[in-house]
Image (cartoon, rainbow, N blue to C red; front, side):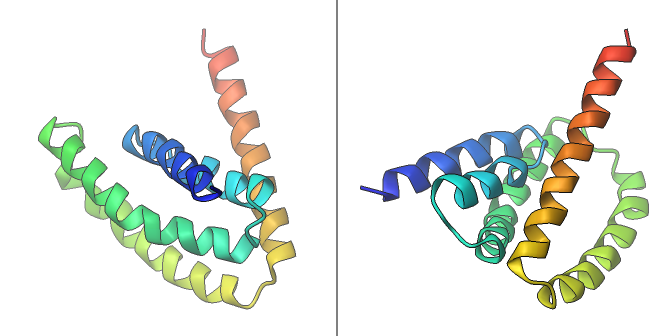
Length: 121
């Protein structure tokens, strides 16, 4: 019966990933807080889930001409390098530290998003 909750969490993350908002911002907290998955495992599951969902979402956005392909390399190369270095760094951290870093990231993202949407008008 618990598998139904995993399916619902996956669907919620997939919806956000499809919209380009990052499904992990929802998937990871739901896995950890509601389903009791360890932080490092939740982040690993999110990364594995990102591969197919990101590929499909990217294909749809390219098809709809929402991606400026000539500028992608300027974002892709530094993002790839930062991903490799951060992954190596994260393997040495414990789940508690990762939880705090991820929580801080979510709080910062919320503050910036709220500020932009409030003061943009």
